[in-house]
Length: 235
Image (cartoon, rainbow, N blue to C red):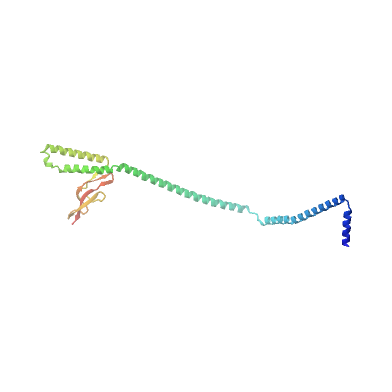
């Protein structure tokens, strides 16, 4: 029966005119497109509804923040930043003070070196002149005093040596070079004296100067040459 109905439909369609068949075809295509669009909209609509529902649920789950809590959190962050800045400032201040102290120490050392160079720059020259002073002293001491009245030439020579030695000592004193000539019984000082030998004694204090072999010299407060001495030792 269905076959007969289909055959009839085919014959009916074939019996239609070309214009009628074209019209029926366009109507069928339009209805098919409408059904397809409706199906797509139906499939998309639940997804959009589900997404909107999820968003609403997420918004509902998020608690509203209390303004006091927000202010407390901000104050905490500010306090932490303030503490950090204060620590950094303290560290920088400490480094600055240390740098100033180091600079001042360097300046003081350089100043001392410059002052020492001014004071002791002639130390080598002075040491060389000490030999000349020793020769003049030896020459004046070796002249026999009893012969001076009898020999005018010897007296003139002696006076010349004495004047030369005095002038040399004056120049030494002008530049800060002074002699170290300890007296007998003076306490032995290793900073200015050098012991060459010991002299046994029964009535003299031990570790005191007994005799001066050669006088020493010091330039300002620095010993250029210690005095060569002999010291007493209790026997």
